[in-house]
Length: 70
Image 1 (spheres, one colour):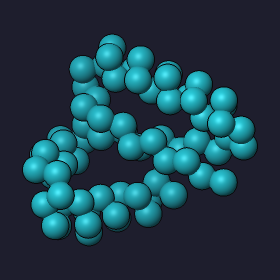
Image 2 (image 1 turned 90 degrees about the vertical axis):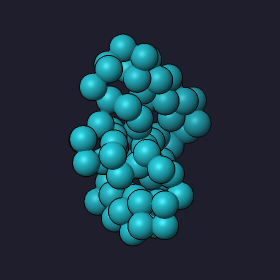
Image 3 (image 1 turned 90 degrees about the horizontal axis):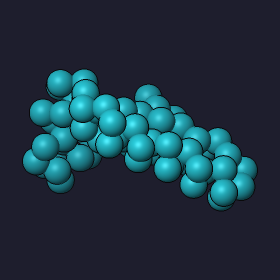
Image 4 (image 1 turned 180 degrees about the horizontal axis):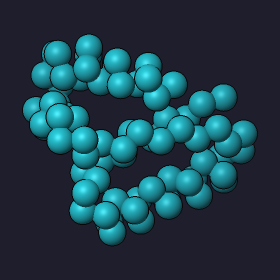
């Protein structure tokens, strides 16, 4: 899923200039890709909160693409 999301980021978001900052952050390796395979919403929400806390603390990471997977 992470590989597919990276392809989507390049071929859609960056190529079509959906987000003007995406290419710069991707090229700087400041996008974090995280998969969550939780089967219940509370597990996914806990993981999302952890990612939000990481974004507040880690200045090396600009954004996280949080991928929910069944």
